[in-house]
Length: 79
Image 1 (cartoon, helix red, strand yellow):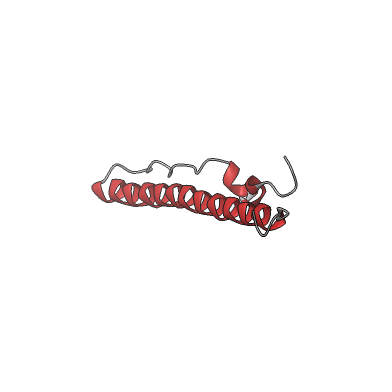
Image 2 (tube, rainbow, N blue to C red; image 1 turned 30 degrees about the vertical axis):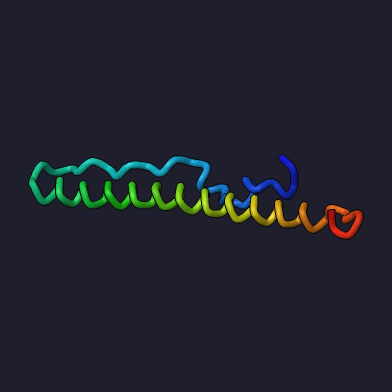
C-alpha cells in the first residue's frame, strides 16, 4: 500500500466487522424488543461505516485527481 493510498484514511477499527447484539437472556417480549433495538443500532453503525468509507475514498480520489491535473506540465499555451 502506498503512503497516500486512500484506504489508509479508513480507521483501522473499521476493518473488523460490527458485531451483532447479544441475544437476550430472558424470553419476555420486552427482552426481545430490547434485543431488536440493540441489533438495529448495530446495523445502523455498520451502514454508517460503509457510507462514511465510500465518502472518504471518493474525496481522496478527487484530491488525488486534482493533484495530478495540477502537476501536469502545460505545453503550447495550456494543451
